[in-house]
Length: 320
Ligand code: UDP
Ligand code: MN
Image (cartoon, rainbow, N blue to C red):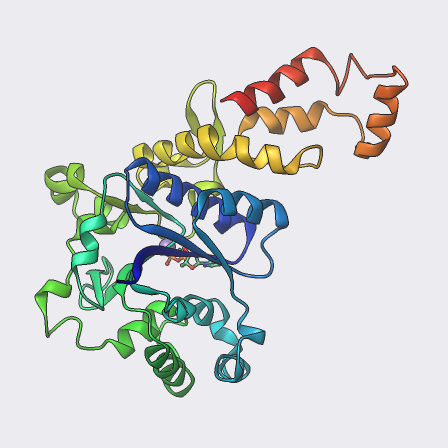
């Protein structure tokens, strides 16, 4: 029997950070499924290298050169770029069944039981519960479904401009035909729920299995102080302050060291305050070749960039 997989998508380095944390959270909760990430051509080599270490499969998707149907659809509907990229998950036909998860989701408990559900299973959207939210859904890869989806997309577009509109249009009987396709809200819990129905959140929130940082502010939009374990920025407005902290703990503890390893001497801002401070102290950038030469000539900048403090910070970041 073909394998089953969790699938996500990242078209840039910011969403790639989300994808890294998501995969770590799935592995930490001992999933037995494969992990697949679709990446767009703008994801950096360094991010891809880290994704390769965490995911079983990293698949490059580029709607602009991926066969005629997708390309044509793209030309007719350039506004649906990221949406068309997400629909690509139906082409993963080496898997029998998959669960798609947005890169801004975090798993807080094992959710392998989702594979007992059928296409298309998803949780209600908190804003319009007759629609499903497309941040988490169960599907069956199929080239036939993929071309039907693309055809639907070019003919009808998306009523919200994104993948959720297309998918709700295509799987339009979701809300009426089969209740087993309604995933409980705990599989896609978004912050909006806390504000719109606080008593329900108090009653059921502790059972959450997947947290979705839906909306404009994503976890990586904030900064983090690893020493005090505090998220900085307008956290008031933040979705799920406690889950946001959980996201940052995982990111700074398990993902940032991997990213630093890939970036080496090249500049990289993790979003943790330590390396922001580090980069502010630093003298004008010197190429790594120049720096190596200076070291070899015995001219290390012991009071500046090569100070013991900086070396220790780097070592700590690696060892954490
Ligand atoms: N996405 C992406 N690049 C983008 C925007 C979106 O890779 O520039 C992917 C990513 O997996 C993301 C999903 O598409 O989680 C849906 O977008 P988003 O989560 O921002 O929408 P929301 O859940 O806030 O409605
Ligand atoms: Mn999302």
